[in-house]
Length: 271
Image (tube, rainbow, N blue to C red; front, top):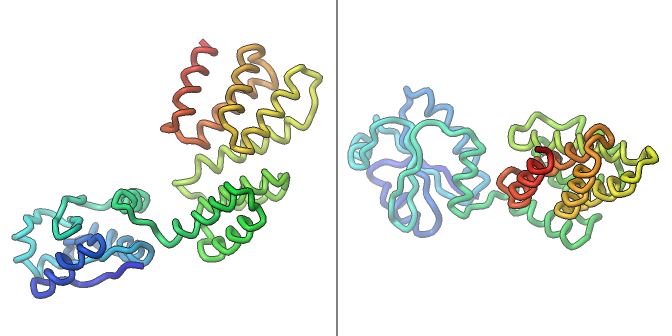
């Protein structure tokens, strides 16, 4: 957990320069009359409660000397200080996800990030019950966190609790950071339900297997399976193989190497 302090010319050296040798310092140059400053301030204060950094707030009207020394031309102007050196941060208001990305670039992890790592470790080692316990505890502290919803849904699907997974997704909040993955999981669940109904087609079993591989996060094997079905029978289950590949791309994100590789192969297969 970090700290939030008001800074002036008398304590600037101690609270900013010297403190930056222990942990990063975000210097927020602001003004009381500045609307965007008042929007940014609570976000930064909230993040200072989650991440281990110092939020040093400088009112430029009360501290014109500091604003002049550091050439502050517009507010809010946020600078980053590390090991006694000041670096440009950003001017204006950033949405919270971008603020968190900035903190991540400073190698900072929130309390939630640290706790969620334990969940990922439990899942990776196959300790599903322990992972479920940790997720339940996290959800009590962070009831609207999209990452918890996604992880909990994936775990329920892996355990075969499809109805509970569907119910959880139905209650998911509209979280900008996770909406794509939440929608992808909804669509994956639908395909899982459909795959349980046999059509008599030769691809019923390979399709069901690829769906299960997707659920088990064996994404490359699943993509290979779907691509084979697609290249042979595009109309199978109303183009379900292509839809399933798009679901995996959404789960992985566009920047993932598998997304890039198999998007190209999908395009070549279709056209």
